[in-house]
Amino acid sequence: MPDHTNAETLLRSERAEAAYRAHYDVLRFIVARRFHIPADEVCGVIHDVFLSFLRNEAKVGRSLADERAWLVGGVCNASRYYWRKHRGEELPADIDQYVDPSAVAEDAMARLLLAAVLRGLPERCRDLLRKRYSEGYTPDEIAAIASLARGSAKNLISKCLLAARAAFSRLRRTSS
Amino acid sequence: MKAHWHYSTADLLAYLDEDTEVVDVAAVAVAVTSCATCAERLRDLEGLGRLIKGQDTWDEADGPVTQLPSIMHVLTESDRIAREKRLAERDFAALREEPFEMWSAYFLAHPEARTEGLARYIIGAAIAELDRRPAYALALLDAVDAFAAELSDWHSQLECRSDAWKNRANALRMLGRYEEALDATVTAERFAKAIPTGAFLLAQIVYTRGTVLFKMGRFADAIVSARDASLRFAEYGDTARVIHARNLEAIALTEQGDVAEGLRVYLLIARQLEHGEDAQMAARVAENIAVAHRRLGAYNDARAYAHAAQEQYLKLGAASEIIRVDWTLGLIDLQTGETAAGLARLRTAAAAFETLDMVADAGFVKLALTEELLRIEEWSEAGMMAAQAAETFARAGAKLHLTTALSFLREAVQQRSATVELVQYVRDYVTADEEDRRFEPPSRVQ
Image (cartoon, rainbow over the protein chains, first blue to last red):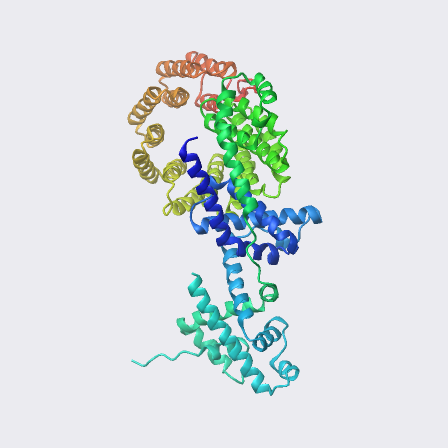
């Protein structure tokens, strides 16, 4: 066999592996959080798309951004296919619309970073932020729940948010 | 100069919370309109606010930290594809020596040869033959479809068959069998839709359908397909294919008569191409812009873009395209009243095409010459040119339906009953090249 064929195989495998390491998390986030595919099916959907990536490898641009966009397009479509198979032809509008793969990837990466930051915050801080920003409690309500003075509650929320923001900015800088 | 004072992050957060106890909300609202730094920081904080309010973010933060699953399964498949590709080279070399009807016997003797790798390899070989030998490409694709139907992995089977049928559509289009080509895209689409990762293939099928519809003269339908394809490619971030689809849209718009809209799309594409590496496409779009300007009567712009396209083709060494642009420049000359120069350019272009053995293109230039000679009532020269055009198309292997049309034109010119409209009618018929459509002389010009 000519050597170039083996080299080509190796390159293709290496490329797939590198792309897998670089993009798996973003793809997982999109499949699980945006398309709400059940947790035990997420990996299967992504692997299908990686196989398709291997088959279409020559047609995909070489830059990291090109690869990511192609893979994001792939998982969005594979997720829609999943729901069509399980729910019939009619999909909810938010799932069935074409997306801008770069914007979707950017959003997913930002949410993954922020999730990592929130995970790393002291529990009390994380709980306060969750109550305020995810569950929608007012500072007064939070003060009552946490048995804090109103001013202290407001102060703590503000400090926690500033700490989260600082860590988020740092992570963003290092990841880019 | 007085130093500019900026609000603190805490102030801006309080502003977003509309917390009047911490900050004068109205004052911040005014300040951010005049302070670019504050406005940018505010946008940044609003972005953070959107992210932290998102349920997705919290679900992710609360979920287990996931480990990267093993990619072994994917890499094993990658190895299989590569191994099958190597074997496919050997098997195809053997199959190529056999007539198609013997292929099933080969597969009976070598059942292990019937692989996804071989199917893909032959599809690749067929694509390489599409321009030169479309009938042979079609036969190859038929053979692929026959054995791909027996591939054990349903995903591979459907993807290969979809790809084969998409390329069958291309081959049939090149053979002028447009209805069959359209049907082939429907079959290709059915297969692509049955697999989870068929959407990228589907985008290519929709584009292929657009090219068939364009050749059929169904420009409105071609535009719909081209736009659909460009949206699908955009979802994969595939800018190059988006540009190809939009170029098809612009060509169809131009041919439909909506030249100004076509030009608008071309100019958008040209801007995107400025930063890319697709020099061939950039040259083609410049050439198309020249044609659109010519049709709109903007002859100076038309000439400028035609010369720019020629320069780019020169760098690419694309001899045939340089001649094609010369053809456009000749038509511009004719439309600006420079008849002698225009006719000379067209004659040179026809001769140059013949030198490159591009006989059919030479025939089309001769039809353009016939049209112009009729317009200026040079009957005898027009008669000679019509005869030459007919003879040129015959040399290009034109089938009976086309030679009938060209003979009709030649006789009409010789009898001095031909009109410019008749030349255009015959040219459109020859361009469409639909074997199933018998040539009917147009009643309005009979």
